[in-house]
Image (cartoon, rainbow over all chains, first blue to last red; front, side, top):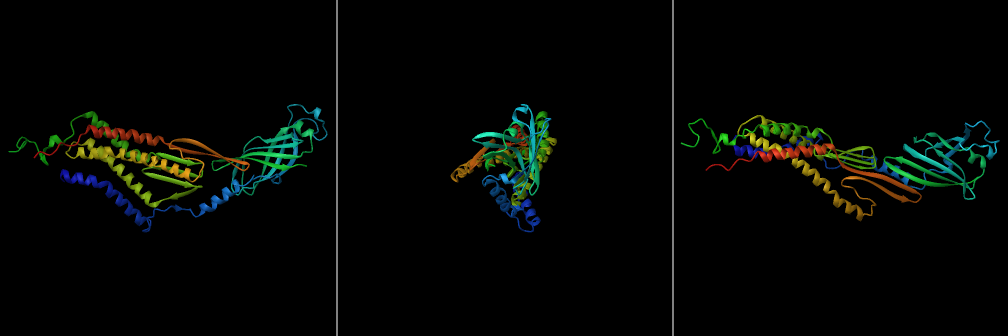
Length: 182
Length: 204
């Protein structure tokens, strides 16, 4: 092989490899080497609609999604029978709240705070202390914590304000939702 | 009698064979050998550029491989996959040619070396051009009233308010360590190519 032939061969080599590879692909893909996307792409529009129509709508949570359980405290006196003055400053209470996930896919509940408001004053405040993953169609038990003093001061409220942060697929949704009083 | 004839000197294509051999410069051959081995490893080091749109769209790209994931579904473009396979074969062959060129001292060694040493720079340049093509895409997004732009490099947090919900997500676009590695190898390749000069014009 002369120098000229070698130069020509080296010049052509990238094109030969490209042509060879595409030809191989053409037969590997049953003579249908497409520039279009392949994979489970039929699923994508439905998934997209399902995920985003749910999350972009108004608040995904409503008060009716929550079922409050019994109030617990570590302090050594009866919660319902105690007067506010008896409650130590650092006395905490926790409430188990049952929440049925309104989402059709798993989401992380990063934070949740519920303020109970009477005469425009927060009379009770409970919040989630650790992140919870909400699975679809499952009822999660959330442990919300608050100050005992707040629980003792009221059993009535005009409205609730719920603040939450949820996360899925790298999107963070911070929302506020208002509920009715009792 | 032609030059070199009769005193043991061969002649190919009008030039003395010694003229065509790479100068006995030990260090450039060692550098070429190292570059050749490094060139062969380039396609196996992973993606060069990553674009992430929250976790909805993940695009990992190099001239030798591509991964596109949309809402957790893997998406492929067969024609591009096979084109990328050809680039992978080409770069491995380029590395092999550099190694052969560095280990031999024949008239064709210089050609193989020069062929192989320039190829990584092609791919590095190619990926930079591909990424720069995102700049016009940004003005297109702006025209469509989409409230964010794709960063060419870096991380951007996009937030917007919809009724009583604030939505935020991250867009990440970055060159990886593999790209830095390829860039270094391509610079080495260009240096080797520069040091191994093309042959002078043929004697008439």
